[in-house]
Image (cartoon, rainbow, N blue to C red; front, side):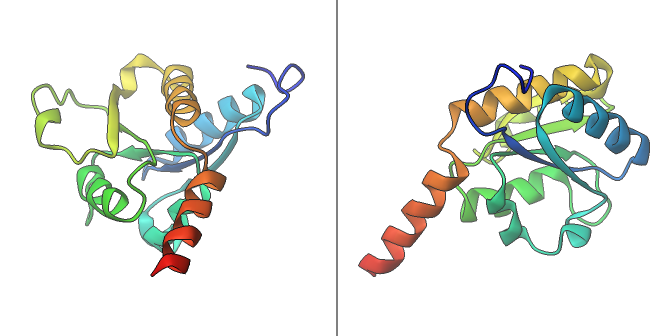
Length: 145
């Protein structure tokens, strides 16, 4: 997945995680893989849930203080139904996935590694409609209304 062999534009991933070490290392992994990754400590630092539409996929920490990953997933499901979220946590979340919003496509335990989380986010982004396609669909629906 190196940028020298890629012909399509790189996937654009957003990471929201309050762990500064996790953010820095994942940013480093993304740079080495040619993936655009913007990292934020919180949704508030990003500025608005609506800004998530600029990305092909999101990596969201399960525990973010005021809003949890599944709560952010509810917003994403409502606004960007086809944008995939990868939920990460340092704790096991066995059995909880049945109650998560449909936008949460995968859970990764942080112990599985930084590269694995990034690879899974890229895989989800490639399998979903692109941010360009989602934006075109929103414009088309807005024009029809």
